[in-house]
Every structure is written in structure tokens, then in C-alpha cells.
Length: 331
Ligand SMILES: Cc1ncc(COP(=O)(O)O)c(C=O)c1O
Image (cartoon, rainbow, N blue to C red; front, side, top):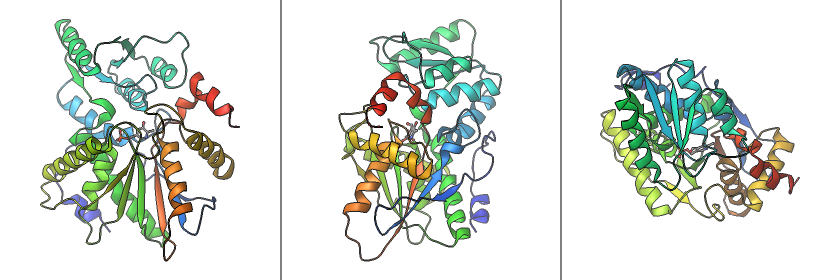
């Protein structure tokens, strides 16, 4: 249904990293009258999956196009983006450097193990601000003769966000094939590119869907502006003269901040694993699902709705000692 629209838009090149649509699955949970669906981007094809592969399709194509011979990115030690960048770089026979804050861990766990298995060079930058460290390391690598391509935090620039512009239409097509229409789309928000792509795509619908981002990182105002900025740039890049539809961001489920689980997020990990056999992560998606649960249990609506939670991956972080110790306390 949307294929001719998408064919008419001037997308930049992509390295194919997706194996077709990810599953769209109805949940067996009963948190109220609404129907709840999971969009399973945790099941993307490579490196244990996650949302970053959709962004990396565009980013890596640009890196190859620029003839880069080294990929540099950054993130928290348990960054899923860093893990998938390391894996995809290795698959494309490019060395990668991951810059993390603080010091190298004494105990290796979760994503960091996978980063090493993928062959990434992991550089801890101590107290130096991450962005500054990335610039410094990039110029050091240049002086050694490399031609590096730097991917921003979370792969969230205009190019990366295009991945979720496309994904939005994948979801609508699947829902239509299954014979239902989504009313509300929810995803967790970190570096903003995922939600920005969805917001930009939503601008093309005659009746836009309700979009809710669940903030897991920072102040909501700043994040709202970041999503608006990126979504506007996506529409400009694709020459689509539309204004952005409204979207919401909640910060109510962030707990004490980025990377720290909440009792609700730990409980939904266990509940969803036991009911649907689906694994959410402690940093991003479990806070998003906690928001969905709250919404389904507390909102008064006149009629049941169809809610989609976009599962953006992140499962490997559970195998970091800090997170599994916390989770086992709730099991
Ligand atoms: C598992 C997971 N979910 C959600 C997000 C948030 O996506 P974005 O950074 O595009 O906002 C990330 C990355 O930051 C992630 O790793």
C-alpha cells in the first residue's frame, strides 16, 4: 500500500541489514481492555538484534561511500548501539573503535563481551566529555593514516532516523494485513532517532496516529526539541513539505535516571518473560513497557484501542552483573 509512496521518495543508499519485516505479535498479557501488540525489532537479524540495525543501514552506506576505513562511535558501557556498530563493522571488514565514559570494567558482562567478540577496540575516556574524546580519538587515528567515519551517539542523526521513517510504514502494512489499525504507538526514547523517524513518517498520514515516547535519559523539554529537530530534518531530506504532527514524551518512568532499573521496570521484565516469553531490557524497553502497563491500567477510554509497543532490543544488557543481580532480586 505504501510501496509506491516510498519508491517516489529520494532515499540515500542503504547497506541491507534487515531480513524483511520484523514480527508484529499480539501480547497475551491482560492489562485492560486494549489490545497490545509487540513490534519485534529485538529480532532483527544480526548481532542479537535491536533498533540500531535500521539506522546502520543508512549510516554504514554513507561510511562505505566515503571510503572510510575505520568506524568510531560512542555510548554507555552497555550501549546496544555500540554493540551493533561493532558487529556490523566487522561484517563489512572495517575495524571499529567504541569510546565509553569512565574506566574499562574489571568484570566484563553483557554488551561489552559482545563488543570484544566483534573485535572492537574499546577506549575508556575517563572524565573527559564523550563528544570531546571522540573528536580527539578521531584526529589521533587520522594522524596514524586512518580515514575514520564517526557515528553519533545512538546513531541518531538525520540519516540514522530514516531507518524508523521506513519502519513506520512496515508496521502499518503489517497491521493492515492482519486486519487491524493501530491507535497508539509507544517506544522508549534515548538519543531520539527512533521516535524522530516515526514522527516524520506520521506526518504523511491523513489522520496521524498517537505517538508516545518514554524518556529514559534526560529532561523532557530538551528531548522533545531534539525529536522535533531530527524529524523536521528527515522531512527536509526527503523533500516532504509537511508540518510535524503532535507527539508526546513522558518522563514519569525514568526512575532515578538513565541506566538504573525501577521496581516497575524489573517487574515487567519478569512478567512479560513469563507470559509472552519475550525479554525486555533493564535500561530502555522495560521502562517503556512499564509506561504502557500504567496507561492500560489507569486511563479511562470509551472504547478499547490497539496499542503497539515497539520493542527496540537491548536484551544483552541483562547479562551484565549489575543488572542481573537487581533483576534476580525480583524473581
Ligand atoms: C534497546 C534500546 N531501545 C531504545 C533505544 C532508544 O532509541 P533512540 O536512541 O533512537 O532514541 C536504544 C538506544 O538508545 C536502545 O538501545
